[in-house]
Amino acid sequence: MHKHTTAQVVVVGGGPVGMLVAAELGHHGVSTVVLEANPETVDQPKAGTLHARTVQGLARRGHLRAPQGSDAALARPSADAFHFAGMPGLVITAPGTEPSPIVGRSQADLERDFEHRARARGVTVLRGHRVTELAPGPDTVEVTAEGPDGVRQFTAEYVIGTDGARSTVREQLGFAAETHAATVSALLGVVRLADPYRVPSGWNRTPRGWTIAGVNPYGHSRFFTIDFRGPHPDRHSPLTLAELRAEAERILGHPVPMTDPVFFSRFNDFARVVSDYRKGRVLLAGDSAHVHFPVGGQGLNLGLQDALNLTWKLALTIKGTAGKDLLDTYDTERRPVARRVVDNTRAQLALMRPDPGLDPLRELFTGLLGVSAANDHLANMISAQDTAYPPRTSDGSSWEGQFLPNLPLTTDEGPTDVIRLLQPGRPVLLLLGADQEAHRKQAEGWSHVLRTVRAGSSRQLPWDAVLIRPDGYLAWASDGGPLAGTLREWFGEP
Ligand SMILES: Cc1cc2nc3c(=O)[nH]c(=O)nc-3n(C[C@H](O)[C@H](O)[C@H](O)COP(=O)(O)OP(=O)(O)OC[C@H]3O[C@@H](n4cnc5c(N)ncnc54)[C@H](O)[C@@H]3O)c2cc1C
View (tube, protein in one colour):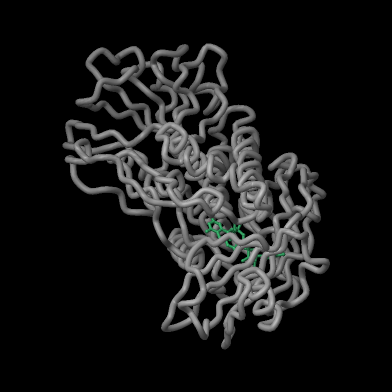
């Protein structure tokens, strides 16, 4: 007989996004099982950059260290150099009260960190288990997986498909999607460059394509090529050293001797965003929901922010303390963000085309990167700091749906800030100023969900009370409609 396990949530796919989902659900006390096909984390040279909004979200949930000390109020914005469409000069800044806007951490290390946290919080992580079938019912979903000891069955109230671009969950449930066909062919090799000083370091455009090289004269280098003549006819055909060498020579116009490959990958700019992130009790997050060309290093960031948006809503729904339709806001909030990322990657690729006719346009864009308003617009887009969610109330404050930057605060217990207030993962009603009795009284009926904090701030703020969601976005501000209406909408009846 097959072994049968029940859990409130089964997470299919324990990559970095699935493991963060699991760590967060574990934190909220939701019984969770992760089914991951790989027996252990695979170190592949993929994402290595956490962008500002991901950094800020992870810091609020205690996954990254926040800046120390109450002098954060005096700190100046931090800045990091990046690129747009391979053009240097994009400066990504974050408020001085936030951690650095760019944090370098490989996706394999993130996956290990989140897995460690998930296990420590009581999540069952079953590696070597590949999900083959899902059968959704009205109250539960049946999941079948093949593991080292044979076939196993799981029953869950909800399933989250974080099983990557070729998602079994997406395919099995027949999620519809908007797609854009591939137009380019990209190769990646981690190789030894025999003549490293002849290979241009970084992003390099020629009339025949691009090379992107992280040159290491003493060891292995990461070497990418992009061919704009069209996608490879067989995306899954294995890449060879001879093909990578020939492509490098074609683009650079001279031989590029290379040896000793340790990793090869072939990819393209096929893009997909599913048309709904939820089908009943099954939800998608990360690459299973959206894929695009990896220019700007945004894919994993998008998925980690999906996880931070979804998990507290799902935990409240499972505990019966969510307002009607709260879980549906996961799709309405996150899907437009993914569509914008797909659009910006397509725009970047269009600007990267090797056609010399585009040279004046690239020069124009390079000039714009030097104009601070234009630079900020693009930097906030790539770092997702321009993310804001649609308001849920018609008479709401213009702050509803905006991300609240970290603020130094003083409370009776001493100095604190927004990042620290959000560590427990509960919504926070932050009351600033003296006359707050009315707001405090309205929130009394929801004390099982939120935490009310009275604090002082030395800043001039446009409101004197806000309701902060666990992911750092504002659900309500005191310059909008009545608090009780918002609380009922988000967390149900008191
Ligand atoms: C060359 C390259 C460079 C990139 N660089 C960046 C970057 O700099 N920054 C950035 O943000 N993003 C980058 N990305 C994108 C990033 O790698 C992905 O967005 C990220 O891996 C998505 O994480 P995920 O957890 O959603 O999916 P995945 O990492 O694909 O994880 C899915 C997991 O599900 C498991 N799985 C699959 N099917 C099943 C099944 N049926 N049953 C059980 N388990 C299953 C897999 O084994 C895997 O562990 C890059 C991508 C590429 C290709």
